[in-house]
Image (tube, rainbow, N blue to C red):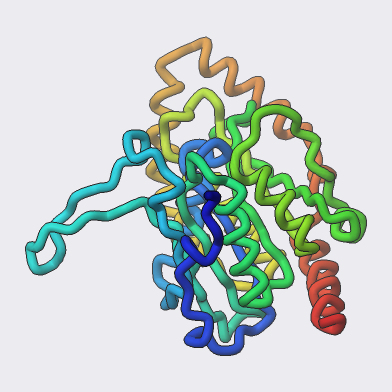
Amino acid sequence: MPITIDEVLNAEWNDVGALRNPVLLVALRGLFDISGVATSALDWMIKERDYVIVADIDPDPFFDFTQERPEVYLDEDGDRQLRWPENEFLVIRYPEGARDIVVLNGVEPHVNWRTFTECIVEVAKKLKCSLVVSLGAAAEQVPHTRVPFVVGSTTHNELAQRLGLSRPQYQGPTGVAGVLLEALDSADIANVSLRVGVPHYLMNAQHPKSAAALLQHLQHVLGIPTDHLQLVDEIGRWQELHDAAVEGDAQASAYVAMLEQTHDQRTEAQMPTGEDLAAELEEFLREQGDDD
């Protein structure tokens, strides 16, 4: 028999309390998170923040543990523990921001995608999240020497028109992110996807510059502090490593110079400014709240 949400979603809704204009952020390590940029961005975002775990998804029905192996570690008392793939929902309150945030910073499952995405939809409903923002990263022809563009899209017709965002045009094999968008549409929950580019010629490296670009857009649009400036040192360190990897290769250096020229010629027309997005999104969410 197929598994149900009640069998795999463990939650303590009554312990949460009222949330202020909550938005759910989702990043899943997998197909659409190249170099782990999106998940690392949320790691940095919650690093210095207090949070409460309100729900989690049981990993057992969703993973092939020969591919996503659990880890053995010793805790503070020296006792042996097992760490399973985690998909936990965290609540972070932002008294200095415009809203509270619910975060799922997890791992893309291998099987039972429909039930997995239904769990996410259920959390969004229970916590009355008026918007779900999914974060991802893709390998693109972008130079490591420039701040990468962040591209926004939505399958929600009204949001697409009001925010000037494109509708997803990708066709082909998808990940859980694609299934999640369909589930959110079916549940009539507004959604926005933010994707950042990662230099395709340095995919085995880390890219804090791309992670910071994602966080900066989130800060502008959602009106919450993301502490993206704490990545400055990491950006500088990896910039030096990236430069060193390219400088010794004349062909690679010429290719990067070509990418820089193309990048500089592009305009920001592909996505409205953060301020424009923030104002229009705030009005949309306010109207959603009035309807409720």
